[in-house]
Structure formats: C-alpha cells, structure tokens
Image 1 (cartoon, rainbow, N blue to C red):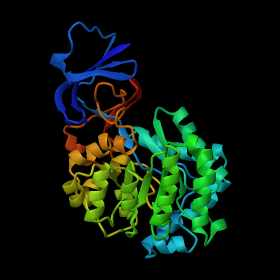
Image 2 (tube, helix red, strand yellow):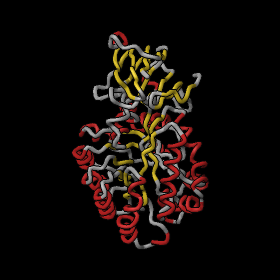
Image 3 (cartoon, rainbow, N blue to C red):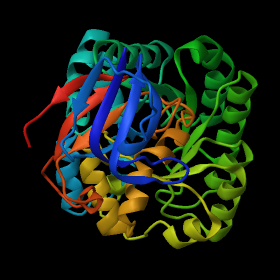
Image 4 (tube, rainbow, N blue to C red):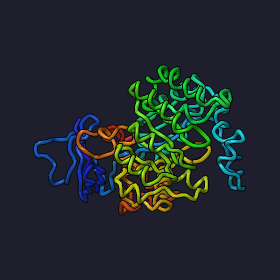
Length: 402
C-alpha cells in the first residue's frame, strides 16, 4: 500500500539535516519511498491512503541507544543513601550497586523479567521511541544472562519496537569470581560468547576502576570481534582508566558516559567513527561534577548521541524526553544536537544508520508526530510529553490528544 503523509513540518534528521516547512512523505509497505516539499510530490503516483498531519512536526521515531531496561527489583534505598552522602563507588564496593540487582535478577523468571520491564518500555514508547537498545548484565552467569536476552527479544515481539540487544556480561565481577577478574573475562570470552553470540547484536563492557580494566575489556573485545560481533563500551564515567582508547582501537559503535574523557580520547573516537553517547540522567542522579568534554567532541567531529540509561541504580527513570532536557541544561547541547542525538546519531551508535534514525528514502517508516510550535521544544519540556502520534514501519501504533 502507498500512503501519503502530508501537511507536516518535517525534521528529516538526514545527512543534510533538512527541515521542510510544508513537507510530505510517501511510504510503501513500511519503507519510505520519497520525502520532500508537498508541492513536489512525484506526479502520477496515486496513494491509496492519505494521512493529514495538520501542520504538526514530524521527526524520525526516537532511538534510545543505551538502556538497562530489563531487570528485577529496585534500589530506592541506595538512592536514599546517596542523597545522604554515600558515593556510588562506596555502595558498590560494599556489595550493593549492580550486585544488588544481580541478586534480584537471578531470582526472577523470564516471565517475571518481561512483566517487570514492560511498563518501563511502554513509558519510552509513549514518548515517540521506536527503537531501543537493551543490555544484559544483571545476570553475570550464563543462564541468567541468556534469560535477560530472551526477555529483551520477547519485549520486542510483543511491542511495536525494534530492540538492539547487547551482551553486558562484563558489567561487574560476580561474587563467585571474587578476586579473579581475569578468569571471569576468560570464561565470558571463550565459553559464554560462542553460546550467546546468536542472541545479541553487540558486546558491551564496563571499563572502570570499580569494574574491569582496559586490558580486560581489550581481550573481551578481541574475542567478540573474532565472532563478528560489534562492540560498545561504558567508559570514563567515574575516572579515566583508558577505556576510550580501547573502544577506538576496536572501532566500537559507541563509547558511553565519558565524563572523564580527554582531548586525546575525543580525537581517537573521531578517527574510529565511534559515537559518544551522553547519559545526563546518570550524571544528575549520581550528583557528578565532572562534565563530559563536549567542546572537544565538537572540535574533533565526534557524533553525539543522548540516551536515558534506564537502570535501577544510577539512572532510575524511563524517559528519553527528560534525558534530552538534561542534555541541554546540564551538558549545554543545542536543540539540534539533542534531536540528532536521539535519531541519526543514536541509530549509528547501534549500527542501524542505514535503516533508521532519519526520514529518508529507503529507511523504515518510523515517525513521531509532535504537537509543538518549534523544534526547540524537544528537550525543553520536563514532565510533559508533546508526542501525539507514533508510527512504526508505516503503521500508526499510538495516538494521543495533546
């Protein structure tokens, strides 16, 4: 079926960052066939359906390119401890933090993981998100990691969303490997990866002084790439232990957090074509002071993405719109940078730049329609959702009166 979407102000988020004041899009069988000024719709085409957007803004469906959305339990008591002065690192070293969620997640069935995670996903979908990355990393044993990946795939099958699943077994050192981080990395690299490779889209790791060293992440990434899996990395969040350089060496799709990255790190990421993913909700929730080097990223031409980092510890929230607001207010990103950061650049962070993240011919027809006056309102509102329509693969999956 050929569908004409007309009378829209379009932020295409394509390589030319086109903005069309009276635009139109032709969609055939879930893919974009043409986009341009409504006066230039190709002659001779006879759409079987026309959808009137009444001057609303149309953007690509949003992409949340960094989440830990699948988990069991919550860590509200830890948030209370942090607001009373304890640090994230101190809580983690005392056996809390990630390991607290590991205990709850290991005890949960696959059905329980799906049901506990569903409301968080639905919150994102209501904000115009049509693609979401979901990490494992709260199992830290083979069967529990596999269960998390299966839960992510079930959420994709049961909702109008594209899921990119990341294996984050190198998230923290499980208690049964206490004091044996090298041995754990060897097990993940040589025993788990061959088993789980078919169930994930990429391999991630946490490179930090409370997690894994640059050398350990380097070994894991070598094993992942030998299996044909792309890599992503949490790096330079709390300190700088060389993670960005490892990510660049392995041409990582993304390097995330990066508060303690240097100018040399930015240059290396730029040469590698790696996307820098900003996670301002974690920055806020942890009351961090060290800002990521935004000017260095701009100067070196590193693409910037923005994500929610939805997780029970450092970013307890499921709102990409709030992350966009925080990226502008806390990190000083422009409205254009934020919009590209949740569309085109986020797509590239997931290796999906040729299929999603732009309103362009050949891309999937994933759209979000917004009842706003200007694009500056994306990343402006906090606690209010101006998304009035979500379209996935050419089908309207959500409509709201805004």
